[in-house]
Length: 591
Image (cartoon, rainbow, N blue to C red; front, side):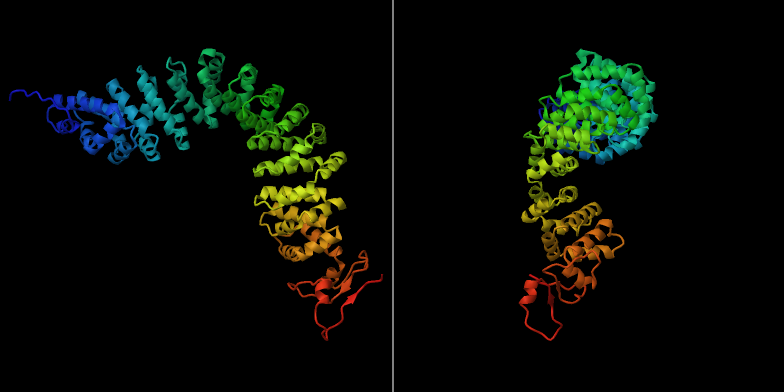
């Protein structure tokens, strides 16, 4: 048969050519389709619609290496489209691509097979298949490929696979750390970046951090930080180091070798907001351990955190405030941060950014809890007014912590007087109505703390705070219920408040609480007793007796015993009733 030269101008013809028995025709058709698909996503969809993928799929196991190579190239470039990926999953493409990763295969096949796998590995179902079909081992081996594209695609695929925590242990067992560290010396920033991102994910596991340390990984990372030419990698490098700081042993080694000092020196001079933010977050993560906190304090990390509060970036201020909160677990750090940091944190309460306010006031809560000295510093820094203003913000966390700080300050009489003069009890009426249990709990606790003054109780009553307080007795949250009982007990010292609380049903709720072994607490029992002691008419009606400390005064009346669940009527309500043949109501009015 004489050779026929055909010039085709449509992709449909090239797709038809994929059914040819001739290797040369197949290779040229694949090449033409690769070039067509490379141009844009619309072309990829066109080929999908023409059924090209089903034909190409058969060619992946073709005996001719050039045909097979060109077919893999088309799949590599097509897999970037989400609709194409859907069909590739149905075809189980990974099962044919993974065997193509053997060492003796063409480097171009390696490049485009790993490219296709990297695109596929974004989806969870494909992750599972790649691992089940033995894809991890050849991918890790290809990290040592001489071809930079193969390295880049392989490490990107591994990065996607380790997002599933189960695969992290698998890559660790396959000794992924040495080749990843080797990629940090690549001349291509994209490869270095992907290697660092992968290290950041897998170093969340303690076992991986140990292997990283054994392979001198910390030195690799510190060397990157010391190299100003690698500035674009510093953020990702810090993320890996941040994970390493969570191990006491690793941190001690970094400290002994001078690595921690190097790290802090680098951080102190950096002005990149993302680096500052990530460094503060790393400190927050590490601060869960008492020994780590000691090391961080020894290295004077507090100075670095306080310097971050002065930056222009709100995100950095938030991260620094959160780290300060975490560092408060160490009593020495708490002292240093309180003395130097409280005035700065108080200033942040006036920020327009509510997230900044919340982070700052949370730090102040941790600094002032069980620290009278720090509480005094807040007052000296004129923090009471901005704290009162914070009660009106929208963020529940900010409101709850502002109440907590004010309550901590209330333990000192001068601060207590100042807070009272700012109208704390009126201000608490709104948080008491909150639907957030943390806000409810802190607000009720504050009522108990500030309600020791008669004027304060009157202020709360006039502000309509007793109604929402009584409702909190119904709360299913144990802490809210306990604090509400405590607040009711304190408020019940005031006779008018006690009467109002009784009319709001507080007495019935407390009786119900005390009948439940699960719900009752010391405060619920004390609150019930206090309410009755401040309302002797009701106590006598309910209990049938008064104790020796109960002194009857004008206004006491005996209307007989009221059955449980029945409403106790006021004098006004009783006076409006018609005369009956029942026992007379005795009313004491000596005046």
